[in-house]
Length: 596
Image 1 (cartoon, helix red, strand yellow):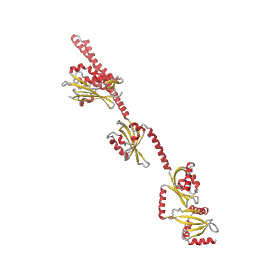
Image 2: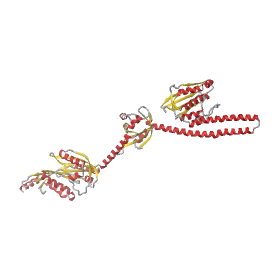
Image 3: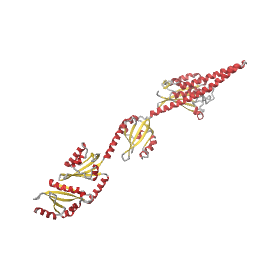
Image 4: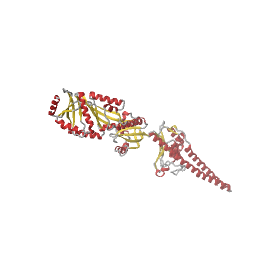
């Protein structure tokens, strides 16, 4: 004991906080600073702090086996933390351990550390520590909550690793721990964890290694539950995958647009087909480059409201321009793509080309209108049958009765002449009715005909009349100009335009008619202009093509010509319009499809 006494004497007078323990952890000697500080603090620890005492004792025992060990205080209530170094030395009687207390955390550092702890508690980020000297593990309160362990659960390295899902996750955490101990490699990994209650969760663990004298003495790091983030990312991945499948395979054009400069970021195959640009060409453009002049300005307010989130989406019809300058009518749907915080990142534009659909709908509507008009004509036809023919039949019936009862020959001859006139009028009415029925129900397939020849044939048909009234017709249609039409209708239309111009010429000046034709945007435009009497369109414009409508005092006017012309044009899918001014002349314009 002599050597021990001399050691005690030496410890008592040495400055600093130190003590000597034997293998049974008996305190053999201590400095005054140790007695006033450490011994007092250790004596104040109650059973709730038994874990700290156990770790202190375990570190002491570790020093007897490995020559050196360390222990770090972890008392949240203390503003100053200390680190203990336990060093074994040989005594003549038995090995002893010298314990030294070293200032580990200064007050300002402690304040920052406590602030960091509080912040991490709010963020639900835990801490962990592996003391390699004592083989003990420390988990913070948050880390224990994430593992869902009970308060009395004792943590060991093996049990801690067993929380990681068997297989790749458990193998990975073992591997990174080993490399951190051996090489000091830090790590930051995501794992699948099975909690104490059996729930499968996702966690992120970080690690730093602490070395002393070339040897790893401690691993410490953070621990965070990232289940919500992983599940959200997975949902986002699935949504993006579904969007990508829809994006690539939908027949509707999709454009992804930058919200800052309207630059096109990405397009699908349908967009390439609609606009005619390749993807490489698209990403060099802005969405504004695809609009017709002034069209973007019409929709700018809608896009502005979208970007300011006054509306989450909008849809309408817009006009765009394709690669070849072709006009594209499209049904559009614009929406915002936002991040997890709801901040807009991109504009998603869906563009459905409805150019052809619109044309077909217009044609359908036109045919519906034609059908409606045809029904109106049938009503007119019924009116003619019920009124005109009944009048004629009644008139003839009365004349026949007069003839039966009349005895004087002169009177009978006069009544017979009246009967002949009535019969002639009846024949004329029936002829007119036949013309109407022919237009309403007689439809033939269109074929390609030479317009120049039809006009020339029409001129030949009225040559004598032209000479008699000194009328000139100028045919400036090209000799090889063809048009798809029903031949009988085209012949009737040309003849009606010619006879109409002759019939309503101005006798005060030499009259003429000029017929021309051209192709514009998929249509054949036929124009017939004369310098005749002209029509008061303000007065008669809404009924100029009506059945039995006449606008001049002419002995041959019956009101059938223009009615028949309009009907025949519409049956062929075309349209006719008129411009006229009294005293100057009239221009009829016929619009037919260029293709069949």
